[in-house]
Length: 251
Image (cartoon, rainbow, N blue to C red; front, side, top):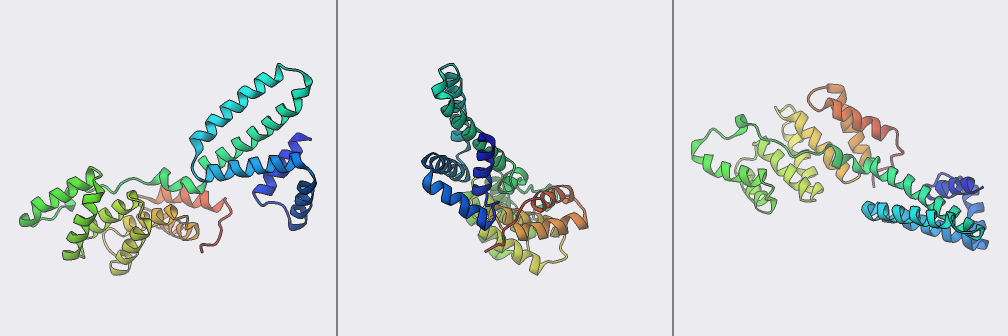
């Protein structure tokens, strides 16, 4: 019975019930204080996880397990408490798995800062020291200084695709994915057959993932996968992950 109840709450919170089933469930909640309380706890748990409070969730799971052990050693009057805690633990574990393995974490899984090769440096010796200073700031992750320096550099050399990739990567690590998206889209429009096209598309895909624009990410990942190249394997994994999950239309 408790397993069925857990499945029902699970389906309700994940919106897997039909309209009629959801209405019946809500009618039962209206007259069942225990059920309403359990649903409220599970909903709060889900919201906490969506706010990335995964560490706190794990602490709560450990606490819940301890409560189960204590209750199991007590008398039969605590059996309901044991069942309720176990159900909550099951829901929490499910949502924890959902967060850890969901498309919302694909960006963190696949993002890596764009690396500059030695051959990408400007051959103009008069600009060499300035360029090295910018690269050093970028490689050290000092983006509050690197971003304006890269922006100024790019104003003078808008055709520099390496600088564009560096700036886009700096934006992504500074929680500015929209700026990265605009810059990368502009780069694709201006240099559709450029030397760095695949890399630009890869970081644009990551920018989409960072903003939960999963439809756009799926389309671009599929393109990168089909063309092949350096990022094809990772793009294929992203494509498979997004394809197996329900993707809401991007607003």
